[in-house]
Length: 500
Image: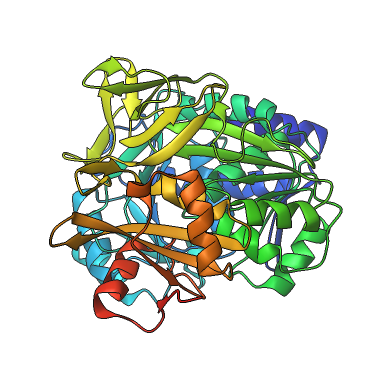
């Protein structure tokens, strides 16, 4: 992404302005740029022995697995504002997965923590230098400052991954021009200015938080983050921020604090914002507009729903209308489906990747001409808004009917007292599959059934409903459907059959 010229502007206008605040580490734009010059110089001095990733002359690929360590923002910004590229590893991956990824795409250097002994051993085995950022090794690695050249907009600046911790990750590469287009679109869509000082409490290894860092630096505002989430530290960060970027689970955690009138914008994504959380967020952050977008790492932004104090730009049950610069098409077998009919969501625009580097042969991202999809299923409503129904392969067939779980989850979370819901298809001897709902909330069972019968046809009603107190979460903060399915099979006591 071409942030190089942005830093020139910020250095001329406000070199002492605070760029990044994480724990006790604070960097002004001037100090951050000097850090980037030293990182660029050191990376350029490394031998470029591997051509696994096409990069410009003089550029290097460095891997990063340090989570929200205070050194993370400057290292990530090096990929955003210098010719070098980052392979963004999730520090929560098991050692075996780290080893396989390093073997498939060996970087020129690895930045890690001294406690990651398995990762360090894997790097040493592959001849990859490992720099432990929590020791003196990083300062020793840095070189005298060197001028940073302009970046090629067509060049890769990041390798990201889309899977969880238990399967082989699908790797993709991002070119700088795609995030440049995204930044231009999101600045207008989210009403961002140089005063949009942003607090992003999530992991920097996840796309929503990393993008928030890029957005904030592009504006010349201050980016606030935490080494690890805790409510007391979050409250301190909120006191000097004007914007929050967080997945719904973390936004819900922030809503457990005191009312905060300084926040004027909230951006959330990664899961549907349920009505109960929307109501609570409006109460805790009374001045904030809440921008809920649907997108994917491979596609970028797809649609947007902005919620004001009393109303929303699209129905709350939807994920909004197409994002600026994006066209939508719901298709089956290469043809558009009629309005209101389920179809695979395709997008056309300049925000999507070209393809995976590996993985995704049978699922995930694909293209049909200029159109791209990750296999999500949805339908276009009569007002032009988009509703999500599920993912290809996630459809449940019960008693001969095709059912998409997300439609039932949306209906459940629109019932007063329900703060979250997951619907699963479980094998059944005569029906093929039966629908099982797991809910968080205290709505009586009779009221749940009554409200669902109003909203859904009979064949979409769950056969069994369980209650849960705390969701098992993936590393990206979403309910872990795999663990929930396992708990169902094992009759785990954390799932309580709804009886009243």
